[in-house]
Figure 1 (tube, protein in one colour):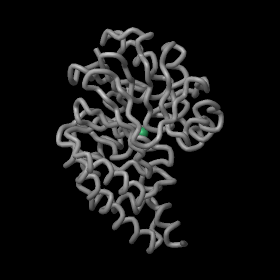
Figure 2: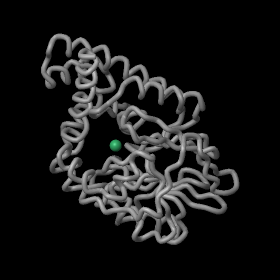
Figure 3: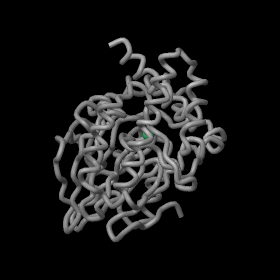
Amino acid sequence: MHTKRLSDHLHIIDLKPTGLENFIASYVLKGEKATAIIETGPTCSIPNLLSGLEEIGIRNEDVDYIMVSHIHIDHAGGSGTLMRHLPNARLIVHLRGAPHMIRPDKLWEQSKLVLGKVAIAYQEIEPVPENRVITPSDGAVFDLGGSVHVKVLETLGHASHHLAYYDTDSQGIFQGDAAGIYFPKLDATIPTAPAPFNLEMTLASLHKMTQLQPKRLYYTHYGPVENGLERLKRYEAQLHLWANVVSEAVKRGDTLESTYQQILEKDPQMKATADFIAKHLVLREGVALQNVHGYVEYFKKKSLA
Ligand SMILES: [Zn+2]
């Protein structure tokens, strides 16, 4: 069993990429007339996603939409492979991300460059047929039937091609990487800020999400949480804390490693995750240092502007 029922309409599937549990989630949202999958994970986890659908009792031909938050390999890399199995599904993706899903060669090369061994483990990105792609505008609503509507929220900052999805039925937001990575067992988040990270845009996106006063958040990394609004505010405070530490470190010319250590000392949430992160290759190389690096690059660019 790697699925869990969250409500009458909503299930979570643990995609377990490279066997790593509780790291990448896919959500399945089912209305009276349509079904959507939110996030695909990378190519290597599509077999787990498909067996998850079977476990929930959803037939492949009944999936109408695949909604991805953004085109990074851990969120959308499996889209092309998944769509070969779901004959009626269309991909919902940000306008700026769509060309890279249709012709993923550059995205794949970039993924290998940034993530190295982790990208290879995630496996190559297959193209998505152009006629099966939808690029909604900010605020667009998808009616899945009954009480289930999904509102698209353009939420830039983590990436220039990021969308979040608000589920009116559960009053929860599938926020992709717009509000950090959550470690359920540690009850801590860390920022999702790889270069080219934009702090102002991330804060504006957070503001857009807090306006909805969400009751819950559905983290891709990882899992559902209650008190969505408070979680967003706590994340905002963490982003400011990192900004204070990193802007000073950049002024002094500190190394990346030293900056990382300073964050570990000053951010209790980061400290709580330190041992866990150190144990996993994907987290250490693909996440923690990348995020500090993204912050450093952001403040370096700012000091030059
Ligand atoms: Zn991610």
